[in-house]
Picture (cartoon, rainbow, N blue to C red):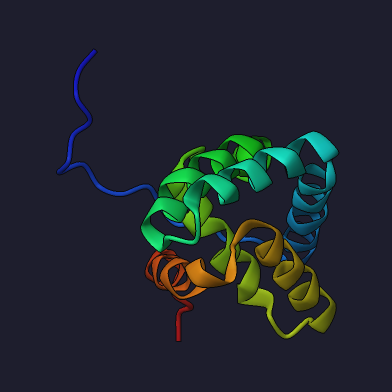
Length: 132
């Protein structure tokens, strides 16, 4: 199998309507509330031992695995890049306070406090930019 072309144009950023963003949040919440999925996340968090870099190495693959159906359903790549594009795409509609609260609840399930600043940096760099 050929190696990916590092010089190929990046896939276009996915944008979500408000309704799609709400659906994404609801779909992701259902997945993350499943007891088996909660256990997978907790195991990954425990293996990280509070180390931010280990946290990234342990949590991101689990989060991608769990959220792959959501990523694919809404046109995001089913990988780390897609995960880092998903949340900023939802937050393009941050004027909806209910959606913001639900997105923050999802973040809390996925991201331990010691990882939050690092993950925020990655998500902001992957965020679609609004046209002015």
